[in-house]
Image (cartoon, rainbow, N blue to C red; front, side, top):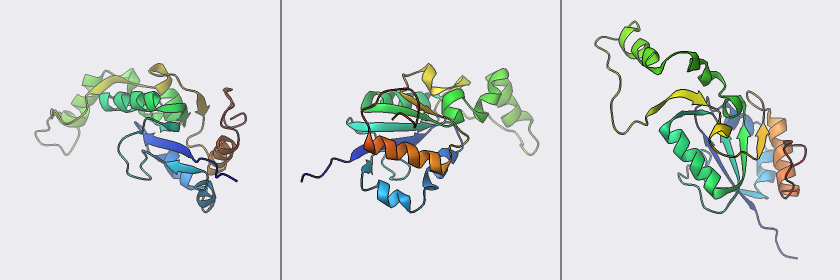
Length: 181
């Protein structure tokens, strides 16, 4: 009997709190069983910094608040057969999008110039820092998303159910996650 090929999974956290990755770890020891069926590619869990061009599944948490977020998201869409928006921030901008009703210049002014405790504050102007976007955007506004996993964050149980279905029936292509994946 030939051994079944493991699914290659990449994950990343964009503009969010990292709670979705933490909830993924809430599957506890069942993660070891899952690792019999998947291998992680780019992920904060592996510290691999680039996404391989042959990833089966990409999981994105967080919205888009800067140019680097957009670049990473496009890299994932280019390299992943299936792309999953995980959590409220990826799906609708989440808490970071609460800044959207204010002009970016007003926010930067408040944070770096008028907040208590800052003497002679300066707005960062380093070419190494990614340029902020005027608003936080959900990821589906920039690339096609195959599945949406709602929650803030999704529960560990929901993550495990989705992963189990991915391993067992990766070819299904409906919008309901994890029920039909």
